[in-house]
Amino acid sequence: MRILHLSDTHLFGDPAARHYDRIDTAAALRGLLARLEGLDAIDAVVHTGDASEDGTAESYRLLHEILDPFAAELGAPLVVVMGNHDVSAVYSESIAPGQRTAARQDRVVSLPGGDRVVVLDSSVPGAGYGHLEPDQLRWLREVLAAPAAGETVLAIHHPPLVGATALLRGLDLDGLDALAAELAGSSVRIVLAGHYHHEMSGAIGGVPVHVAPGVTNVVDPLGAGADEQALALSGVSVVEIDEGAPRVVSSVLPNAGDALEDIGRPVYRFDPAQVARILEVAGR
Image (cartoon, rainbow, N blue to C red; front, side, top):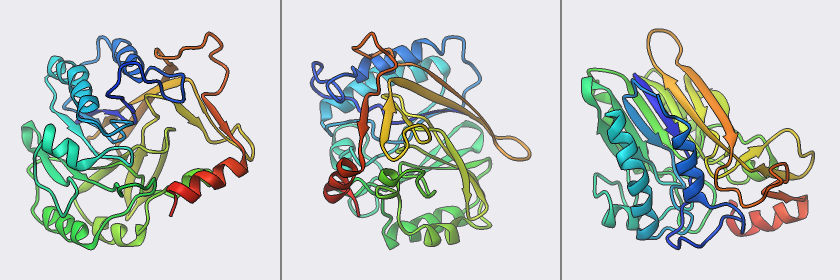
C-alpha cells in the first residue's frame, strides 16, 4: 500500500485572500502537485485536514477542483479529513455526505485490494485543539473489530503525539490514553495526521504515527528559540506499507504561492506573549 500524504492546504473561498496576508494557498497546492510529476503506484491520496481556512463550500469545491483530477490521474481515491479550520457540516452537506458520528465526519474509505482508510474527525467547532468523543471511540472500536482484507490506516487531523512547541502543545489532541487503548493490538498499521505543519514521527498504542509537513507553510519547531515561526515552504510525504515497519519519505520545497522574493523571511514569528493570546482564544 502506497499513500501520498498531504495536509494543511488552508484554501480560501475568496481567490484574492492570502494566508497571513502573504501565501496564495491555491498556488501553493498547485505548485507542489506540479513538482510531483512522474509519481506513480499510489493507492490513495490522503489529505489530513485544514483543507480550508475559512470553512466555505467554495473553498472545498476549489480543493476538489485541484485534487480530484490529480488523484484520478494517479488512479487513486482521494480521502479528505476534517481539521480545526474546517467546518465538518459544510463539507459533509456540500461535498461528501457519508457516515458520521454525532456532528462529525467519521467514515471508512474502502480501497481497491481490500485496504481501507479509517477517518476520525477530531475538530472542535471554534477551537484549535482536537478532541474525540466517547461515541467516536466506540465507533472506532466497532470498525476495527471487523477485520479488513488488506491494510488499515487511521487518518486524523490532530496528531496523537505531544506537540514540539508551546503553541502546538496548547492546540494538540486530548484523550491520548483512551485512543491508545483502542489502537493497541489492532490492525491499524499507521496513523496519519497533520495540524503541526512539520514532519514528525512517533507512536501511540504501539502503532506508528506520521505527521506530514504543511502545504501552505512549514513550521520550524527547532530554530525559533522561545518564539514560534513558520517558513514559506510546502511539504508532502509518501507512506509505504509492506512487511515490517511502514516507510515514510518526505519532501519540503519552496512555496509556490509565496508573494515575497525573500523566501528566508518567516511567514509568521510569534513571541511568547502572542502565543499566550492565541491560546486564550483557540486553546484548551
